[in-house]
Length: 345
Image (cartoon, rainbow, N blue to C red; front, side, top):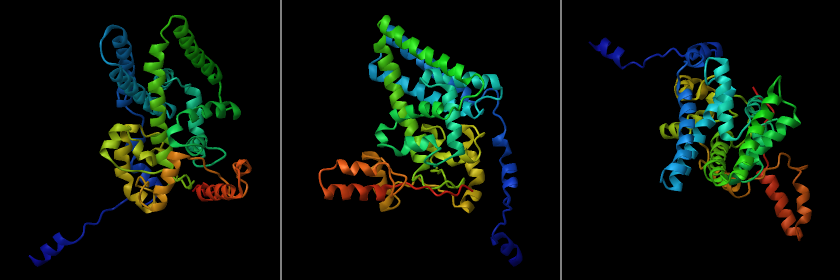
């Protein structure tokens, strides 16, 4: 009896995979292509249904404007996840359907799918690299509340780096031509009020949402290029629902082919490995005084230098009226500088 109790009270030994190949094997079911009918397909169809609902209600219904704007926002928010998964070929197992979902979601968002895809893949290749990560500029070159307009930098980056392949430049032209045609038709046929209220306004709101939860929060404090630490996880059932898994963003960076609806179970399956690697698994905003002050700075000003001595913003000190303000400006640049670690592995 004594021996039996000793065995029952002894700690259980759990055999966890040790090598990266064993870990990858243990989560292979999440890495495989999604089913033909999966939640991303539901988001794509649902987003378009909500978009048509808002237009129909605008002309035929009597729903108040705030309700229509909220529904339009939800529609575009859903399509934001579709375009993201489509650019990683994780929206649908059929390549052509995956592409169609990517282009379709891009049109509704006012984006260009080739631009989004090529620029986003550059982000994955150069996370937190001030020169080569386009999202690093979006996140660190201005206040958080103005993050949406900085997404236009993606288009500049796409052409400046000549990122297009095969027919993608033509696809960009067709999508931008369609966007311009809709706006010109709105001007000619007098439905710009619909465009402003049910498209541009909600798109701006979605741009802020995507910027904060896809770019800013997952990568702050923007210092690590190590693959296990260049993004973070902040587990939450509510956030997992509201932002469709982006609170498990590090999981996405480590295994980009995992669809959004499997981030959470993939995280739970690999948490011991992330613990071992020292991966950040908290939001990291108010954990220390420094975190809180940096977050407050990002909300108010947010412009960060990437060099202390040769900052491109240092010459702005000459525009200030006295020596005291110039010295304070340079001190601020030094304190808020973001100089990522060069090590990636």
